[in-house]
Image (cartoon, rainbow, N blue to C red; front, side, top):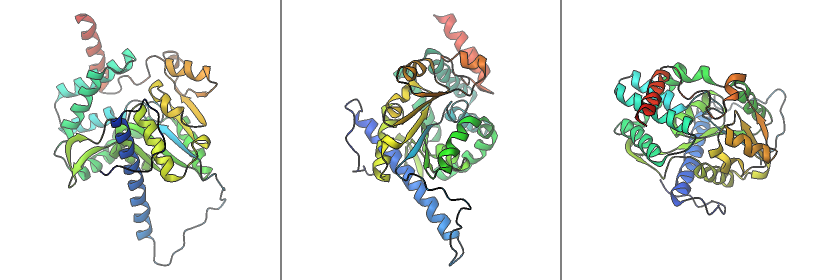
Length: 315
């Protein structure tokens, strides 16, 4: 994928791979949105004019909203819901499902990003899709959304996104999940599009490699910065929403940062800077801000608990 040339000056903390991942995510998001718009235009009757909204709202066309996905818009992690769906379809064996559950548990319970765990999770996901066609995974992703994700959308966060849309602003998901999965979720929710991790494909087939690195931490900020430059947005007039302290680089880019269902570190950081907070979890779950509600969900819960117990016995 060709590098983009419209990045604005970036922080020194961003690595070259973060920049590449951000550029690739922004390019993929814009391409997906343009393809959807062109498809809609081609399906419109010849000579037909677009219907005017009954009550049009003149919005700020230089403002947009950026939403993290996991535990912000949706309960749990999209990649693990997707993994459950692939397991159900015999894409991999139970031991790999258990490994996915353990990686999720470690990330959520430890509260840190161990490089070895993140590398292992990335390699596992890429090995599963390697050799499969992008169109195949997109089709399966539609089914998995209905099976595992549709009922896990936080109504409160969904209402925030809709408020931006009603104001005439574009709304983007920004996530480390595969861009194909993120795009499906964004479309189902009626959002503008999605920025996500870009897996390399050649002639429509996954190679098992990434373009850059996972869209995580500083890479998310780079993606938002790149998209804002391409769209002519003023970041000082934009809003961003996330549950995780890992997204502080993205939240710090915009003029209107929000902490949604925040973890302990983000809650402390947000309060110190007078950022707005929203918590849509139950009181019991919200109290455990260090352990987000969906550390292990549905079929993953048993495997997660067993993995944690095994880890403790081995210490």
